[in-house]
Image 1 (tube, rainbow, N blue to C red):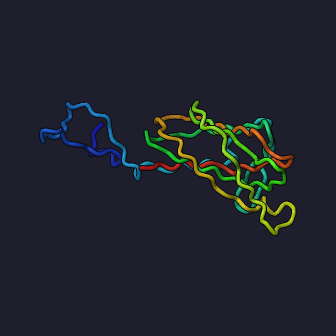
Image 2: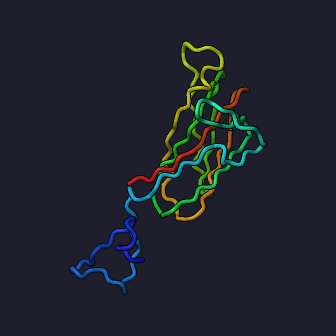
Image 3: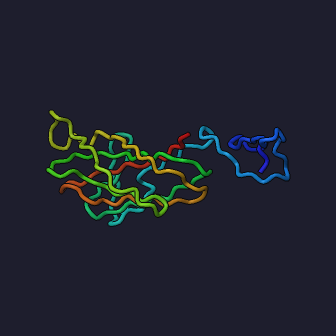
Length: 171
């Protein structure tokens, strides 16, 4: 790959001051700011069991309960380290918190606890309009297709609404 033809790749010089030439094989080094953010709305996910999306303001999401699974396919343009941002709302009314397990490209990232988005002084159902984001460092992803699964491990009887994921490259 020619470093001059791709702005996402930097050329480096050898230790003796020799410039890396066309005959020298090196792995390209990706600049994090050159990798685009990948935004995948929930409406692009495969949801099991199947359900219809719910419109909230200018976002659509799926109400999912314990045992449900959302599968996203991310087209990763370049090898980079990523933060996964999960967008959701959770009008929670149980003692135990709602939990979702995240599996990225076959790697189990473990469960995360979903924040209760119900306002302290709010009425029943007020929390559904409050869409929040939780960040998770998922490490490096290779270029190509990466499957991201969200498995609802525990919810109250109302479930949680998943509105999408965003993959953001990090330095």
